[in-house]
Length: 494
Ligand code: FAD
Image 1 (tube, protein in one colour):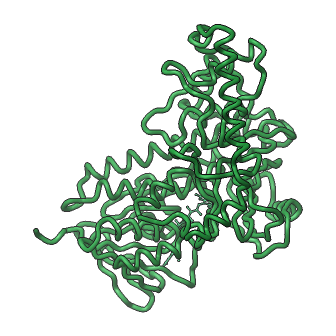
Image 2: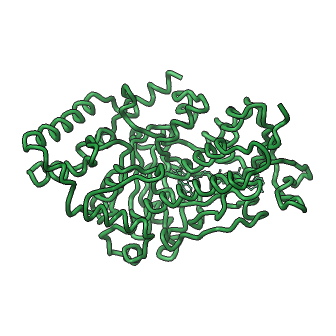
Image 3: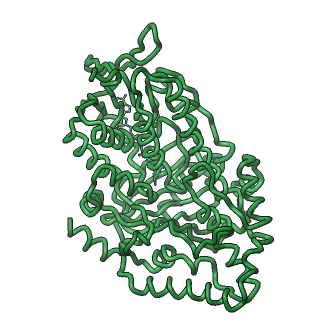
C-alpha cells in the first residue's frame, strides 16, 4: 500500500476540542497517521464546559474508555437532564429530561394520549410519565438493565482533556508546547503548509485541525472562512464562570435559572460545583452581572471569576481547503442545552467518516460543511425556542426576546405543535420529539388539538395505560439508590 497522502495531521490547540480530536484520530487511524498537537500553556484554555448530553457515552465507548475510571478522573456525576427555573414566568420550573416520556404509538407521540387523558380527568402532569425526570428530581440514579435510563455526564472538562491527552499520547500523538506565531500558506494552492512557533520551530502538515478556540487562528486568521453572526436570534454575548465548594450531595441534573437579562447555570460535580451567569451586555453590565452571580451562589468560592465574551454564530465553512475547524473555532452557541462538546464530537466523528482517501475532495468538504451546518441550525432553533416562547415581560431583555423575529423553520415547528400537538424529528436531529415536547410545554405552548387515534382508546383502556405507566415509573424510581452515593461506589470500582 502506498503512503497515505494525508499522513501528517496537525492539531492546533489542546483544549477539549484538540484532545478529543487527537484521542479519536489516534485510536481509530493508528499508525497510518502521523499526528502532532500544538498547544500553549501560556494561552491556556477557555476553562468552562461541564455539562454534556447522552451521545458522549458513544464517543467514550468508541475510545474504549472505562466509564468508572473516566468518572473518577474527571470527577464526573451523572446527568439526567436540565431543570429550567423562571423561563416561562417567574416562579415556575420545568424539566428537560433525556428520557422518553410515556410510550409512543406508531401513529402518534405519547403527548397525544396524555392530552386526551386531560379531557378525561387524568390531570397528572406530563412529567409524571418520565423515569429520568422523576429520578432526577428525587436525586436518584442507577444503571438499569437494557440501558433503560438515558443519561450524560457533568464533568470537569479540563480533567477530561488531560485524561484524553494521556490516551492520545499513549496511542502515538506527538505533543508540542509553544505559541503559534504564524500560519504559513502554500503560495500556489493557498492551503496551509505549516505552523511556525514563536521558538522558530516549523510544523508541516497535510491536514490541519483548527482547535484554537475563539481565536480561530487557522480557519479565520489565515484562511478567512467567514462567520455568520446569530446574535439577532440569541442575544446573550457574555458569561462569568466561578467554581464553588459543594454544599450538598451532587444532584443528577444541571440547573438553568433565568434572570432578567439571561440565565445562570449550576452544575454539580463530585469535588465542586460549577456556576456561571450568561447575560446580554446590552441589558446588564459586567459589574452588575458579577454581583448577581455572587449573590446567587452557594458555598465558598474556589476560583476567581472567569469573564468570557462571545459572539453567537458559526464559521461559514467549517472545513475550508485543508483545514477543519473543530470546537469554538467553528462557532459557538451559548451552553443552555450543553451542545458544544457534542458538536466537537460530531465534527470529529464526521471527519473520521469523511477522512480524505487522497487529496482533499471538494465533495467531502461540501458534505462535511452541509452536515455540520444542519446540526448547528437545528440546535440554534431549539435554543431560540427557550427565549422566544416566554410569558415573561418583566424586563426589557425578555420583552425583546418575546418580540424578536425567529427562523421560519422554528415558527413552523412551534405552530404545528400549537395547532395539532405534533412534532417531528428530521435529518438525524440531535433533539428528538420528546425534547421538543418537554420544552414547548414547559415554555407554555399548549396544543389546541391532538391526534384522533388517542380517542380510539376506551376510557378504561386509557386509564389502564396512563395508570400503568405512572405506577411503573414510581416503582422503578422507588427502587433506585441515591445518586451521590451511587457515584462514589461506582468510581471505587475503577
Ligand atoms: P479552548 O478550550 O479555548 O482551547 C483552545 C486551545 O488552543 C488551547 O489549548 C490554547 O492554548 C490553544 N491556542 C490558542 N491560540 C494558540 C496559539 N497561538 N498557539 C498555540 N496554541 C494556541 N460546552 C458544553 O458542551 N457544555 C457546557 O456546559 C459548556 N459551557 C460553556 C460555558 C461557556 C461560558 C462557554 C464560553 C463555553 C461553554 N461550553 C460548553 C463550550 C466548551 O467550553 C467548549 O466547546 C470546549 O471547551 C472546547 O473548547 P476549545 O477546545 O474549542 O477551545
